Length: 450
Image (cartoon, rainbow, N blue to C red):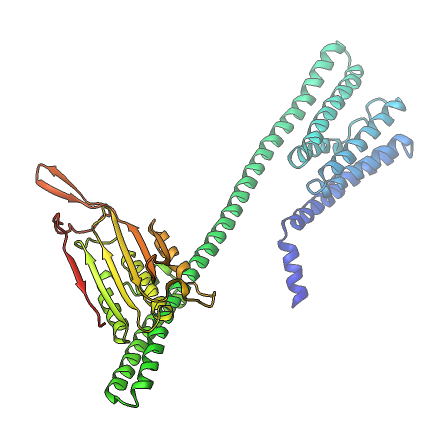
């Protein structure tokens, strides 16, 4: 079976197909033209003379050389040209006239000129054209001297006829070569486009994997941090307060279920072939879900407060998820590194023109906190903010503790007057008009347990 497949592969190879076709054509020309011409040359009045032998040899060699006219066009053209020139020179040297000066296989010189012009290099094309024209001049001189009348007119007529055939063949070959080069350029362009398409697909896959890894890190890291805190608290409370232990176990179960649902939605992308449709399966929280997120963290016993400054505006698609995940990661880091008695404040500020600010502060260990050096939380936060042209800064606060500050630029709405009245135009199409923001923007604060 393997050998059969190898044979089929060789038959499908264009180079092998060309060689097979040319070989069969060459064999047919040898049998139909070369052998009869050689027989006539050897059985004519010339007998086995040098002239007859040279003519018979050229009659066999010239069509046989067409077998490699496309794979080795230069070698094929040199063989045909040399064979034709050899028997002509021998005929002239023996002073036999024009009896065997021109034979049917000499027309294969035009085929050789065509082949080397189409498939050969530039120098070979020019050399073949010059050699053919010189041969035309030589034949015109010899043949004009054999005919009666004005030798000049005979020379010009014969030269014009032979040269016209040569130039016509050369022009046709040039046109064919141009077509082949155009087709080859299209094939090369299609190949490059395929390579670029594959590269873009690989980049898209890499970006999708990074996004999924970021989602998994945020979901799993936050959930496990809260679960660990609740488990530790429940273990100590179980000795004295069974109700507190039960509440801790309930919180662990709820967090586990939520995390499992998020992970299933995220991993659903890997099973779906269309990433665009799969994106709709991912959790898409908005800033309003920050209350639920803070409540989850607060249920673990952490002192968390939320502050909202200004009136909320519509967010571009995906920006709500970015705010949610950055806040989630910042709270997770605070739970792990700030210490058991640290107070955390989440600030969501809309007042700055065209900018949404999320700031998470804690008064815990700050610069004294040490991590394992393998975390990717800050990197993920910066990547998320960079998708919307924003930035994230994180570091110890001057007065103690740690601060994470994220800024996302938002398209500012504009008001225009037209014939129908006042119209609102959003920076992002399809967004509803926001409520008017008074100069004294409200500040809403939700205090957690102290």
